[in-house]
Every structure is written in C-alpha cells, then in structure tokens.
Image (tube, rainbow, N blue to C red):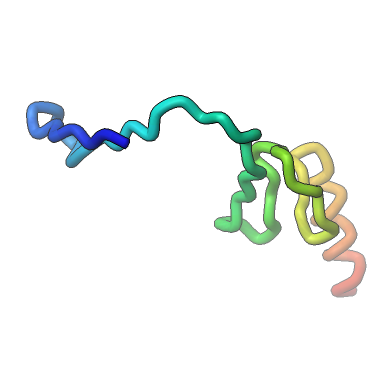
Amino acid sequence: MMCFNVSNFQGLDFIVDGGVRIADPSTVVDMTGTYPTIIRQGKGPRLDWMVTEDNQHEAQSMLAFKAA
C-alpha cells in the first residue's frame, strides 16, 4: 500500500493506493436514504432488507401500503 501527499491538489489531503485487487468485488449498499439501496452487487448474497434501484419504487409502495 502506498500513500501520497497531494498538498498541491486543492481539496485532497492524501491518496491511498491499495494496488491491484485480487479478490472479487464486495457488495456496496447505500444506507443514507429511507431504504437501503444496492449500489453494486458483488460476491455476497442479496438479502431481503436490501433494495436494488430497480425495485426501490416497489419497496416504497409496499411500505406505504403497510403503514395505511
């Protein structure tokens, strides 16, 4: 792993270069909204609580229906 001082670039404190990835990519889930949304499906399984962008509207409709 290498770390570079990038004080010449405005807004960046440093860059970390982890080198070449050998492992399969992981799943990335956005937890900032009302519903967890899968940003990238990786090696891990898709769990029931995860919502893909394709079915996010459907999940919102189901939650509204359950709340009524």
